[in-house]
Image 1 (cartoon, one colour):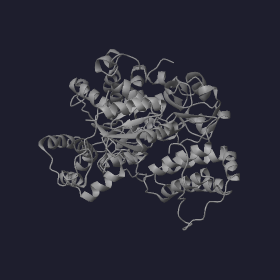
Image 2: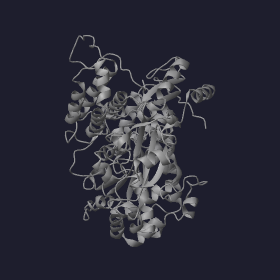
Image 3: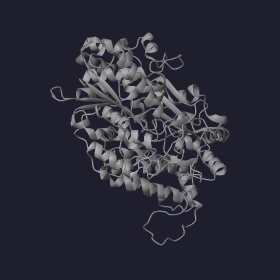
Image 4: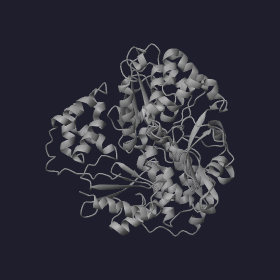
Length: 437
Length: 175
């Protein structure tokens, strides 16, 4: 497939405005300004574009939730937090083609009637925040942004807002809290951000990759976009592949390719001639799939049918040498660290998972541990928390226990009782072995 | 590319902080980006961390006064996020990613190598204040694992030999 989102990759000086304009850049925005907001929204609905950040919600429909008659300002926020483990696609777009992101933001802002947009980028991405600032500076100088966008009379300012190290700020309501200068505690929904968002005003939050799809939908038409993939699962998609593959990296492929094609053709298979054991299809928050499920199609609906999710398209590939108990412990540690602490099931549940998994790794597993883990996962998911972080660890960790239960039971069969503790109700205080520590 | 060292201001210097004209004008510019002053809190804290190397209590008080917030509120925000230093950092903060993709691609070997070479582990710093190690969660560069972020810069596809070369370069350029 001819690349759309990554067509600048490998071109000399691809980040400059001159290079972007020479590739037909800002033509989509020009067309959008001529069409008017309603027609732009209709094109995006017709393209069947679904959000690339993880939830897969139809982008055009999200825009229509913004109240038409709202008198005050409204905002567009580009989510460049990219904090889902296994995901590194937005960074790739910004690295090679920051103007593509800016054009997408301008098109979306125009469609919803926003005159201020923010790019919320994770704090660690200093280099990529600077690349965006440089590109924004160029666009302002050339009157592509500012009081009179491309001579249309429409005004738009875009500001870069850096986060400061918090996974939770990739969740849209937490991101808005952080944008407002607060701790990143997710908000209860409804009201949804499209009605009450940043600074109490209607706000649309779209992912970098989602916005980067817009210029080509405008220039090549929604029918072209919808012709890639299958109905409800249309367009090109970036897959970030990491772990034990020969050629990890970001691949632009049509939605609906199989994971077998991604892992064995595009990424050259598993390193060192080893065998595939398992993979996370859409970031670490997606339920794990086994080697037997590698023919699953990589699109939103096929992943849902397989009991998992496409998520952000971050494919983490694990070979036969990986101990799945260690993998579960590593992920539990991540989510326990990143839980904001607002909701008890998530805060306590993630910590207890860390304790139990590390106790198993330390050789003191108990027969009831796998079921306890599954019970904690049920307790922390299915609407028991304000935001989906509870689900984000419950689903993958319960899927690891369900699909690789024999590995847990083997360790537990060889376990010795844990040494007695002074305070039996306190968490496991012994050593926490496992990789990464 | 060579990573610039952090120059952490002395705690004494930051007991009482007054922003100079340059800082004031940058803060004033940031405030134009938002409808309310509080929204500039993260950007202003970043400005301060760049200038002073860390966010001392005196810095929090000055930021609070400038944005019309209470020092307690500012401290609540500062400590929620992991990237603001609330103690003076070493000149080079080695942030080793330990999440799954890096973990299965050799993050553990990097940490073991750092312990052997520098004698320190996560949460510790070398006695001369040159290096500090932090085990961090996913840095969003999983395709080039394992990854270490040094101050603001990413170093990717590392192995012990590359890490050695990097440490040599940083130690030599430390002033």
